[in-house]
Length: 132
Image (tube, rainbow, N blue to C red; front, side, top):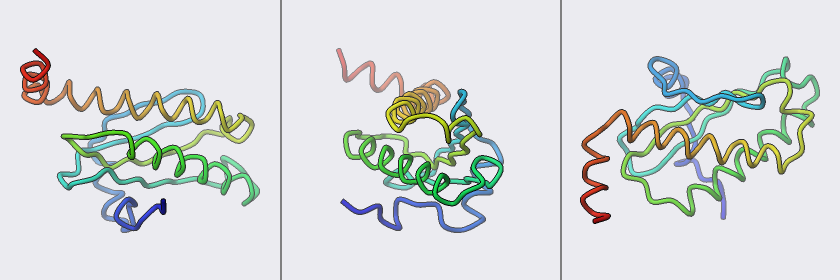
């Protein structure tokens, strides 16, 4: 399955919207910002700087891991509120294994979607009604 253009943040204005009032999640490997986008699917943007990893090989590895994890996570989720994500890796991310990065990212995706539900209590009440 390909990582389509619809699944990416492409324009600077799209990134700027996420940076304005984000929902945040962070650990030693990543800082991830998210914002509700109001469209039918989640989208991903990445900002991997040379400060994180000086060599392009390392930056590309981090981006590849993030894209693959995002793709597999979105394939298994049904979202009521879709989000735009911007992933900002830390310098520690380049030294960690792909498995550790995957676990970290999965925790972030779940944490951010949960925070979105907590900020929109109407959604949470609807889910509680359907679960009964």
